[in-house]
Length: 293
Image: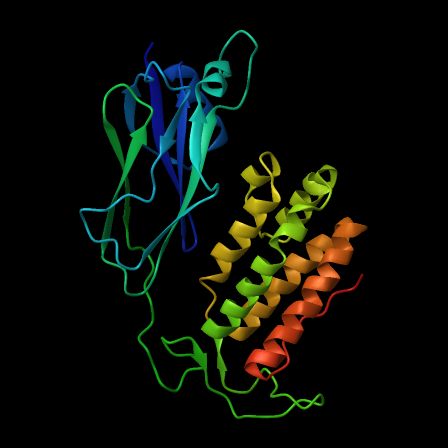
């Protein structure tokens, strides 16, 4: 039996969204994309057959690349991008399953990115070898580096040093934003298991709060998981270049948890304290984020 997979692209600020969507019914799939992603650019349609021994196909996003992708970040929204035959078969069938099976990937460019991205994505689990490609071109115009601006290309903020009332340097001191983001990520990793143990019943409520703060896209409200939320938080954090942006991003993230209440609010308070303590201990200044629980 022949199947079809379509790539479609959306552009949101500095982020390129690439979605790989598979189905048996090409007409139903194209209609779904036009109705739900009217601004999307549709790529080439590719037909495939499953291997007789396989019940899924997998997009291999970590393979050796023949062309340079320096300065580009490929960020899948799931640890493994697998599309299962059972889910693909349901879309467009008699049971009127309304959402096709898909894999979402974010693509980011940096100031030093090569002009054009041509990133290969082989498919595993297909009868005949198939390699798809993610295409993108640099769209963002970056300002030239100026030593008098508040930040440089190394993400170091240079302001007059001052001391806070608690004895540590204040956020207006010289701050290496890259180190701040590393500490934030390290704390998240240390609390990863605890965050994943929060009650799953409240995950949709958290998705709504994160969406309200513009921290996730609409798709995450339907396919929500703590792992996906954390991955999206970290992906956005990577592209923040000054301390106020980082602080606002973290505060919105924690406020979303607080709004859910219960154990989610308790988790936010612990993460809030951990971030402040870790940054004070490792970097010597006060990280100003305030949440109400």
